[in-house]
Length: 625
Image 1 (cartoon, rainbow, N blue to C red):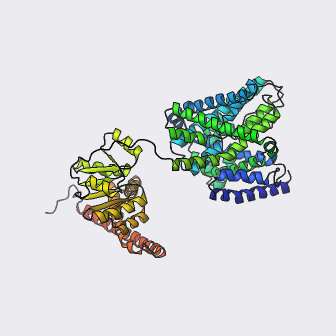
Image 2: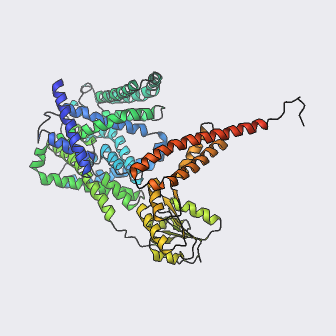
Image 3: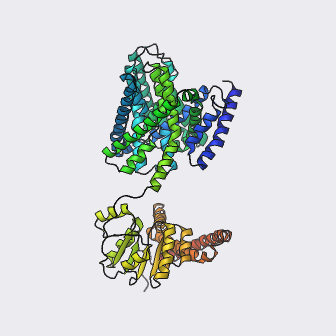
């Protein structure tokens, strides 16, 4: 490829991504689908703006290589042990069930059993890039669904290595040259045992080099304090490992994953992640564009019903398999189903494995082309499927029976607590420990089910209903604590309770400073920003870790709390006018910091003077009376 042609293709790909992805995001379709659509538009089957995209595709595959390297950096022994059930239990179950179901479907469609098994194994793979990015965008990456998905994806990534060894054993026709699989033929003329030894030697080189050569190299580079050289060294490592693995006939992405695992416990892990992350996002976007550009629309047009049927069947079977595996692992129904929808597509490794299977004589070229289209279309449909599933979850009524209605037999309570989550529980326990009569209300069926198992007598109901508050004893109670996490409902509750029960003192949990001002406007008597005290304690502990005495750090935190509270109420009148509030906040913040420093200096001086006055007399000197 000439330099001019490369620059033109880079211009086309980048322009397509810049235009399509923001539009797709605004439409709620996700960035991955935006990249795929951009690729289809500029590809040879529509606008034909890029011509032969094979060279760009090989460059873009480096995005998957970097992704697997970053995943490998996260695979620490402690993580593997902690996630062993999700990886080796749930992951193996998902892949086994999916492969069996898809293979059975292939047999029903007339495939040879060996080709059916190969298709089942290949299509059981899901897209690491799409799933992780989708979970991140939807805020599910760290939750139960994210843990399940990551464990399954990690097992699939590990399973690719034995699949490269297994697929040739399923060959029906004579194998094609090895270069079709990985692009290199250096070892193609050697016997299988020589190739196997080469793979083992390459793996050993990666493990040994990562442990004994790469770490000292990074220490040497880090000592130079040149950020760009450290980044270049990290990229050099990934490229070198990928090239080595490609030479011996192993997936470059798997080699990068292994290199990441070797460096997972090194002191440079976080620095490597930070430096390589921007390249991952850009190259993965380019990878998805080239996948879209490589989608053979002629195959789609020739048998659209067959293709749609296969895609729908594969995605349904994969969802069902993940759901079954999740239920076998005793995961919740919704969690298992959500993970199944997220993992329903065919993964990027399918493009590599299908080419390898075709070259090894496991399946014929027309089937390889059809399944390649199936993989690309399933990737494109995944954002739509997850969006539809999220909407279903939001509109789904909770069909579980309401918790048992408990009688309000606590007598006349002193306090009514609305919301018995993590915030309300702490306040309630403190009150009960001091013999305060408390009635607790919560409207979450899930929360009620959990906390009643721990012996808490919590009443089910919406505390914003005045009749429920009245039944709970609001007319005789002294205090109403609003600890719910619904900001709008908290405002409505303060307003309604203030009007219906004017004698009640109302305290509320505020989400942030803005919500706190809104609560004040509704007539709340006192409030607490939910993160403020925890963050203040966190800062006090940080001061102690930095060498401040516990007394000095506690005094600093107390002064900061008092000044911040005074400033909060002082700025309340200006809150309605945003620009005025911002200007006043900026000016008062600077004043507050100056006063805090002056006050701390004064107190420190008093402490020093007091300590000097209490210094014991020097031994041997006569003490004055």
